[in-house]
Length: 225
Ligand SMILES: Cc1cc2nc3c(=O)[nH]c(=O)nc-3n(C[C@H](O)[C@H](O)[C@H](O)COP(=O)(O)O)c2cc1C
Image (cartoon, helix red, strand yellow):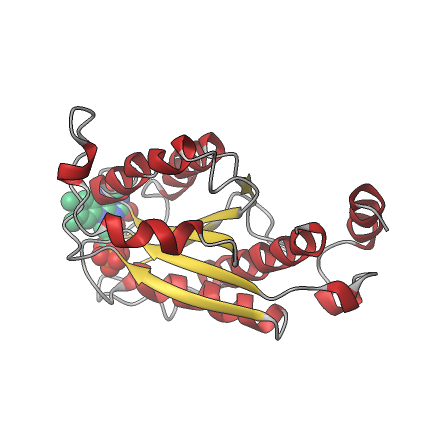
């Protein structure tokens, strides 16, 4: 079965069911999904939302492994075109991790600051230009985005689109949260006590995003050498 036939078969089958239902399950490869928390605060609501996404990704198929990476404390500075490495900080350590061929999907999580992504998230995404310059090392990896704000409509969708724009510039395959919510990604609300535990609607989008990213990454891994 070539790539076109495979995609036709699997897309026709839909993506809500188990990936085990794919026509070529026997050829499936292991896939790693990374979650990148772009909150300046370690272990808070953005990390919690990403953990929900990654849990759902693992539940999609036993061959899926995950890793949560927090940017807090990595001292990633504003991208300086005159000397990019000087402002990289701890981003340098992430270059081989993100570009590793075993990584099939990357879920970027950002808190909402002033109606959009954090400056840490933007700095991270700008430093990712190194991948574009390295023969588009992120091309073909699946990209998803999760945003957490203090308000129900605090800028989550705006942030999702902003991050997605950067992922598209990497030739990544950008997906939203899967069925039944099926919109632009995961959007959650911090209840004011640094918890997302009671945001049932938001948690559903996080689970659907994690599962969808894993399913598409698995489908693409079948045909990847
Ligand atoms: C500087 C700043 C600006 C913020 N602006 C917004 C905003 O525009 N909309 C919103 O919904 N929440 C806003 N928040 C709240 C955070 O998005 C929210 O607390 C989020 O859960 C923080 O993520 P974290 O727990 O991972 O740090 C802001 C918080 C800070 C510190």
